[in-house]
Length: 113
Image 1 (cartoon, rainbow, N blue to C red):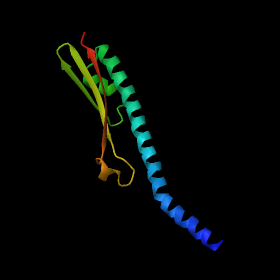
Image 2 (image 1 turned 180 degrees about the vertical axis):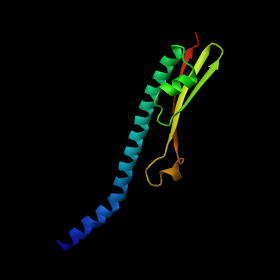
Image 3 (image 1 turned 90 degrees about the horizontal axis):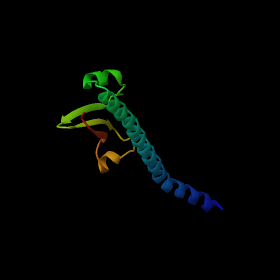
């Protein structure tokens, strides 16, 4: 009976770091998905404002960008509206595997009328 308690403790110590890494990865993934959703909304609003005749400066004043970058690029008859923001992962050691930050971006290409 005494050895089983020690065995359970060793198993717990082995499984704990793996479980914590999985939890942090899920949190990071959820943060990226949430940020992408926010950027989708900002891009959609910027597209609507641009189509109503607003300039980039007017759009930036009217929208709450929450630190996101807004680019409006006019190329001939098309307009590329792009929002992007960097997010730093909270998972320990994740920055060594990938990058220090994730750049999440959303863009819409519309016809310039």
